[in-house]
Image (cartoon, rainbow, N blue to C red; front, side, top):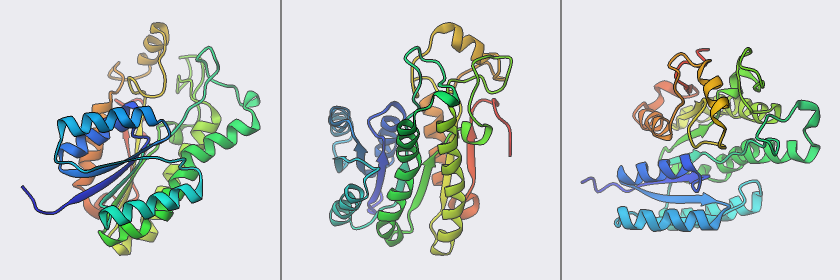
Length: 264
């Protein structure tokens, strides 16, 4: 067993994919800072981590990661507790839909909802990278930003005759495009410090951001070469792969979507 202590920070840790990230990192020997706005989800995850990985140190923080003061305070607490960060996973995100579960047409997006999506999906990444930078720098830490296939393709449409068939709307895809490009910018700025920055862009993931009826899922599968949806474990596998990649893939976005999107 290595005597080197590794520390990872995961935002959106209370969600399906965030929980999988946390459990996987604990299995690899990381101590964890789990961040979410839903205290109940955090408490449940912390209980699971203590039960399955009793030697793992876990700091659970209920933080509004769109608020600079809250993020700065969280960074100070983490630095005082762990004296450095090996990995930051910016996983938090939202994808609003109509009450019916359908895509919100562009002209129906409310101004305040646009702002909320941009703050949650993009501004939070900026704030986390900015205020956790010193902790990451101290240990030549890695940053992994969770983007989306829609950040490369644009928002979805409601007919499977057009690509991509999805309920993701324009504000979501625009925010994730920002994450992809911020990843490139950070990779250039942090490269000389030995701090790689990557993005993972999932496609359709079972249990990701919403539940859909069977007809929607079947129509969606028709656009995917494997006729399969992704699962959280595949996104975790992508993270594990990037953790072994060093600087060679810094700035890159790893698309994980069963061939639904094959762009460069």
